[in-house]
Length: 391
Image 1 (tube, one colour):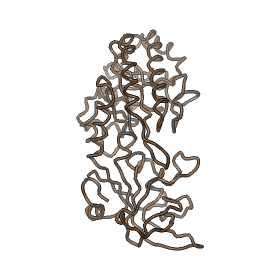
Image 2: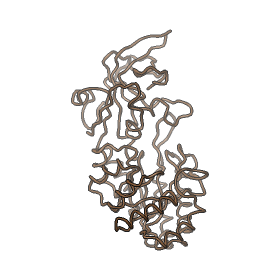
Image 3: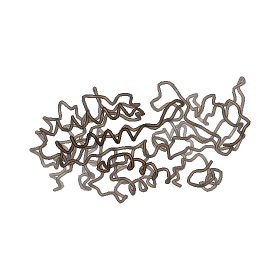
């Protein structure tokens, strides 16, 4: 197999050691191009850095999209090193520290307020610094994104301000030293059903219109979140983005009528980078235990928690996995691929049919561009960390 035009074996030699993640810049570029072709041109694309905050990846994405969304002070520093204008960077996440708020305010970043406490803190810090903070309210909607892999809104949530409390918050904001930008309304993630996303987008725009009646000024920014999923497991089909784009084009006239000053933003992370990355580890040993073949690698859940099934899966399913230097091999066997950690949870593939592998072969886990290294317990058992490369 190849990634970024390089044979995997040569890339492994270039990197110098395994395990490593490799991200294909051409696939990243193509994904953004595909979205531009299928979504209305008025809609801006933002990259949610939490999906993959590797600085080289963020730099590349910043050259392609219209803005960045961050979730920590550490991500803020990476974002500020890019070409992205600070007014096109937004900061979400509950529990922002005073220092994080001060840094974001000084930089001119839009703060997605997640509570009344954050609102009063931003106002106080802005007054002390002599700046007028740019703020939007992250709204916990009164509906859910149906069929989403991870629900971020609807019901009781630690994220955002409950929709029914937002009008009073907006009235208070009108008395403060805050530059009201608009709303961030995000219902969930990893959704492969276009009809669910279309329904949520319609409800999101209606909710923003309703809330705007109490706003202290015009809505200049409406981030309707994302939720676009990618297929990981057998039977899953790619999301029909074309249908979403056509439906969104039909919703835009209503948004323009009632929110004429609002820039509509779709915020995506996994969908932009997930399919552009692989995780590569090397077979260290091959053993048989009561007729079950095990390939033991130098990788594992400490690098790729999601592939082990311990990052949100209720019933463990295998990620797409291959022996990367034997893609054309015809001799096959059923194997389980495990890491080198002292826990039975350290499984990268369970009873999968694979080419017959030997010590030294390269195991590849696909769909690994999002929520990989930084979403994994890298310090667990003190093994070496994985490397990352952009090719």
